[in-house]
Length: 318
Image 1 (cartoon, rainbow, N blue to C red):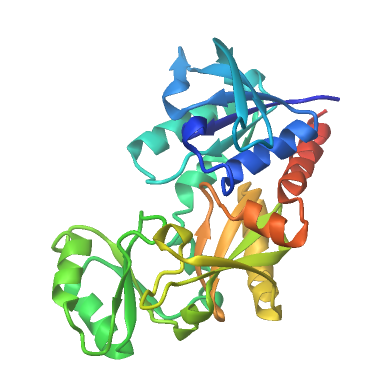
Image 2 (image 1 turned 135 degrees about the vertical axis):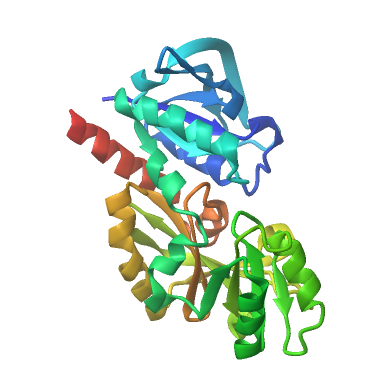
């Protein structure tokens, strides 16, 4: 049986062909026989409570000169699509939240949304990780600058970061001398008006910030370690980090085992865990990346694993 799949994503013409995970997922879906439909965030709307979208039929190609072709735009009831991928990059702002409400209406009308809209709203990528304290480094979430200063005084070496950033944006390493600590906390908290996170610095960042992909509660057996440039503390590829694919360690697998039941319970089919050394630091639920790099290094088919999980659910619905 063939199924239909809608994708909500950033403009497909502007993606990085070599690295874009959404494109890899769409290629896997097309290989699996899904009919593809393309939407950008602004194409979604509610019409008398019914989820609708101005969508276009989509074909994708493994060609750096021509990786997509779009059909004519047409108004589509989103609930009539079998499944939809929500793949818009953060920031997780009000517009993102409104999109999840529209997708939740499509879900009520019968579409399988990946990842589940309620879970996208509930699971802030930094705070969600704190629900597994056995996996995390010492940390604090606060907007009280005195508490944040006390955290730094206790641990001496700390990372401070916003709760809504991506790609390493706004991440600061405050060393034991506390240089610029006050200015950093004032800026990140907007002088005490915004919650931020502090984490004890993990020296193992020098060996990479590992992205572990989890599909339907099962870990892909390889991760991508994002290794910082010299003098940097951020391994994010967007911040200049270098990617190196590696097998998972026993500790990595243990962390996945701790987290996986909650992911499945919440309807989070495709998730990226960030692990530095022995510690879980973030759980990425909005648009996890690094599929292309891991597939290229180890011959995996991560998109195929996700499409298999999606197809299994659609088959069970009958």
